[in-house]
Image 1 (cartoon, rainbow, N blue to C red):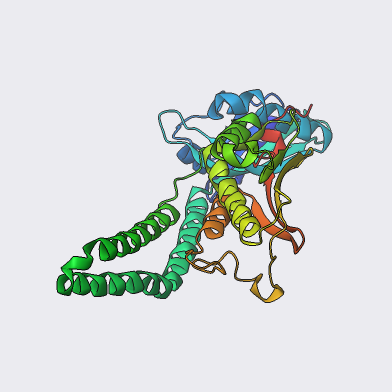
Image 2 (image 1 turned 45 degrees about the vertical axis):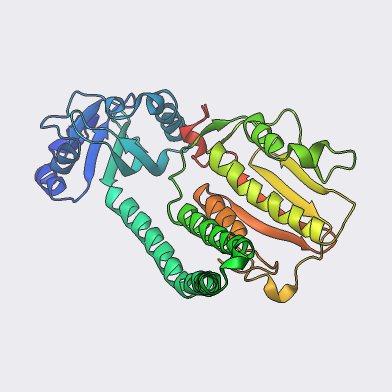
Length: 362
């Protein structure tokens, strides 16, 4: 018998019972999103005993209804299928990340309809986060030996100076200065470690380039404003807004710039460090060039490791922190050139969200 309505497909004997056993939400939708049929798992996931007659759009967030839902419908009209992740919000329940699959079906002799299947993958996202944290914990474990070394040395020096001070109180000013220096080293080390370990979760939002450049220009005002500037900033006034955490990005860029300035000053260069910003339709690039002594090829695999440094008196945590922040912002830092000039580049996507969730693609 040839069905005349899409809903008739779900009256086939035993089909409903079979679909209720599927460990995924299954729905039959009109082309406007009205739910014609929903299996038991769909009701459980969306905390609804009866989904028929409701519109699937109501389980999307408001912004996703304006953009994401309309783009899904456009994909179905053009391609007949859409698959991806989205955020569903049950009425009275907590929202969750869902892996979704839409299929437009046009059976002969019956009205077209959409088959929608979905699963809650929030636990997989949580597992991804746990694995990421585990990698960071393993990374921290490997840092312990270096941390012990960097802390033990100043403590031994402090102890020795304290004993000398006790024995030679007449040299109090000399020993006190040395004690203050060692204590400041310990303080800076602990601050760097604390910042690395307790880096806040990024708060992504659309950002204009001036929100990044103004704090950097204020921080390096002296290096920029001299008659022979040590730092030159080259960036276009107009760049597309990009999706990031501006405070964390400024912190990462500051570490890269500071690293370049120190290399520039150590080499006694007169040519300034160049900080350049460029962007296209996909990504934004921040590059820092210096004319210092450069990087040796055999050190390239270590430069982002904690405590790796070729500079006396430094801890080697600046580039490590910058690399960690870039990763959190869905970007990366790379060495573009190793000598004359040495070039570090931080690349960020304009928007880490999929196009269908941020742009109307009709």
